Length: 249
Image 1 (tube, rainbow, N blue to C red):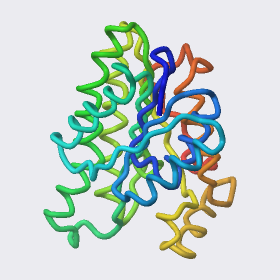
Image 2 (image 1 turned 30 degrees about the vertical axis):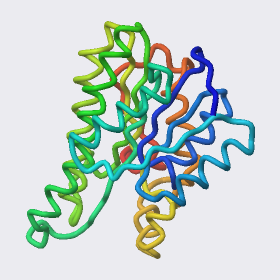
Image 3 (image 1 turned 180 degrees about the vertical axis):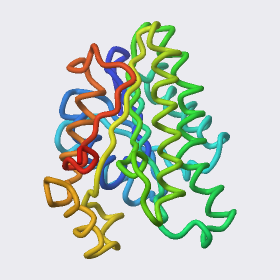
């Protein structure tokens, strides 16, 4: 695909399904060249085809994003596809195993923190300095309402996203003076392909908030797009709760 040098480019991890795919579609509709990262080649190609058939610009980067090396390789490939620049980074990829602390294994711990914390950390390390040199850029990290309160079975997932909350503030302080805005979106229960396995558990969790229902992927994507674009030009280091009011009560 031919993309002009001036076309803004967004890199979206976990961009081939759920919230990531919804955000990719919305950004593409704004004329942004979207680079979607995912493990599944078929889903990646389907996502790209869907965007292109609607007149948007998109490319797929295949990666399991399991460690710092894979993050650096994705950054290198994205810069290449983005004609030397990435204007928006959306750290959306993540895993969310639930269960009692005493049942979690070291392998599970390492995997959760590698995907949920290490990969975003090294993607920012690769891309934020380049944004800073250009004097502009936006990074949106995906957090969770489970990082804001204690809940049985959510110690591993919640703590990984609590790290993301702090990193969001640290990166805003570090790169904000150079024009790079870093913010986070904190979703509540959201109906996606990944959460379908929760069945009634998703509805029960959502019922605890004032909205009383799960979000759609599109509703979370709207918040991501807001923070990623100039509509949020004076917002730095914020965590936007999109959780149906759960953390407000």
